[in-house]
Length: 297
Image (tube, rainbow, N blue to C red; front, top):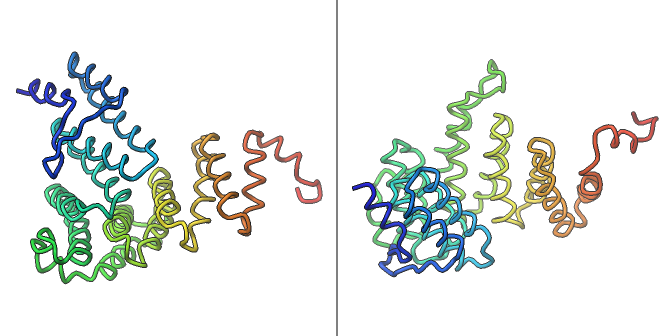
């Protein structure tokens, strides 16, 4: 039976949420599907999913991104990789919130999260669904408690509970992680709310304090890409570049972050610092020390 599912995913046409066939014509994706037909190993499944995700990120328009992310969500569904499907749906909400499919995607994501026991996240998403699309059939199915939820107060309560002066990071890890996830969910499900970029900033800062660097970079990225006019978007982009350089030694993407900062925010107070870091990203610590005047060392 399991091989039947692996065979199905190798087909070039899949059905979308609206029962419209999506034909995948990308050569790299088709190649991975052909490989999967011959060998249904976990490695090849992960390879296919990863290829679809990568190709989605490479697309230049929201329309093309939507096609690849939707294809990825459906592929994960057929393969039974539901956690990965949630990731694809999340990306669909981030890139294509104006899509007519957004209410259905919000409802599906909330349902998946509730099924996995992540009821707080599901409630925040359901609340956004009812708030932004209250005339849709999906919104009408939102339960009364989630409709009346004060999302701001609800999320804030987890942030306050996260602080614990006795811990090594000054945070209660479980509560801090939940707060970070709630901040991300709020911004993703309700980007029209004026508070959404601030939630991404607060979530990223909490993640940085907690030492969750990967999540921190992801939230800074979402902030500076989705809300470029937000007052702290430049700071998010700058810190993102610095973290990529110093924590990951990812000099290629650090350079891209610094270059983007200089281009987008040339008059910002951190522009000179970004230029200095860009010019010296390939230098060692010893080489950088030589650039500092002796009286400042």
